[in-house]
Length: 110
Image (cartoon, rainbow, N blue to C red; front, side, top):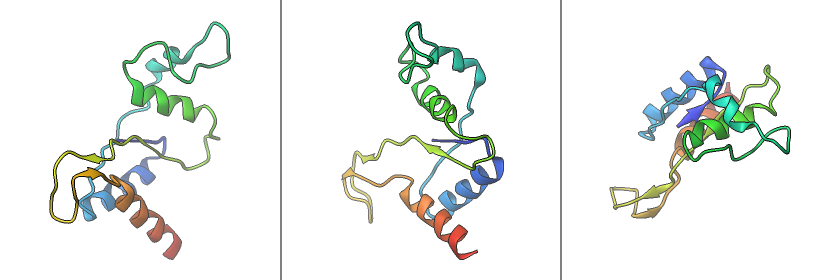
C-alpha cells in the first residue's frame, strides 16, 4: 500500500511496481480520519484512538510533518512470504523494495 499527495509520483511508483512484478496499490489519505489523531494531552497522537484505519492514520500522521510541496510517499508493507515461490523464498521478504529501487534508479538516471 502506498500513500502520497502527489499523483504523478504515485503513478510512477505503480508503473515500476507493475514492471517489477512487485505489486503496490494506492490508498487515500482520507481527511475524515485525521480526527482519529487528536489527543487530549498532546498536539497530535501518533497511534490514533483506534486500531481501525491504522495504515491510513499512520500516513496522515507522517503527512503532518512534510511540507506540502515536498514529494513523498509512505509505504505500508507486510514484508513476509507465507510460502516459497520462484526467486522469493518463504519468510521475510522485501515487498515493494524492487519497485522503490526501480523508481529511485529512474529518477537518478533521468
